[in-house]
Amino acid sequence: SLTAVSLVFALFELNPAPFCMLDEVDAPLDEANVGRFCDLVKERSAEVQFIFITHNKRTMQLGEQLTGVTMHEPGVSRLVSVDVEQAIELAAV
Image (cartoon, rainbow, N blue to C red; front, side):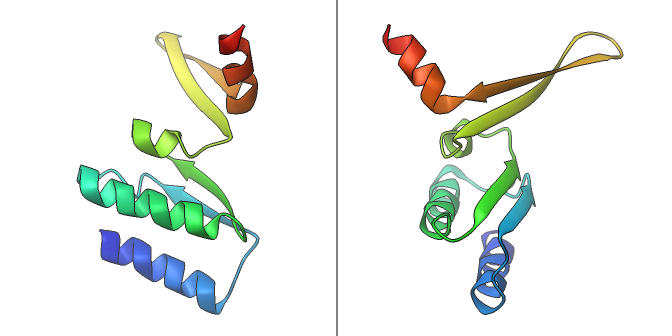
């Protein structure tokens, strides 16, 4: 799995794009490889904006903006957005 992710990053080196969307690419990775994946994202985020779907808390820590979907009752979804920087400021109060 990390090999496939590395291939995607290599393609971005050859043909850069303004953003990259990744859907749960970290799900099959063990903790050590999640760390490697996060390092790749940090390294490339200076040139590429990342939009990724994840359930991994470590990967979520990379985000500046988190958006989640919750379901309080069957069939009714609710969208929740959090600006991480603003949340940190509010938590410090």
